[in-house]
Length: 80
Image (cartoon, rainbow, N blue to C red; front, side, top):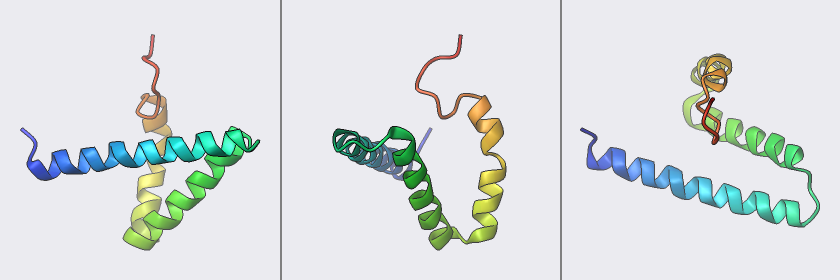
């Protein structure tokens, strides 16, 4: 069973995702393409991750992204 810290972290991640969704909606409203927003968000995310964990740790994380993407970890739709 997860700890209170795990629950707190999960809640923070959900809240952060909400903020990002709001920023995307505002950007789209202002005429910015979704793919431009996504690339900028990825850049900002990697800058933050590198500042927090360093290049080596983040590059190891990034190496696993293709398999995680294919596994559906970043999809909101259920795989059929």
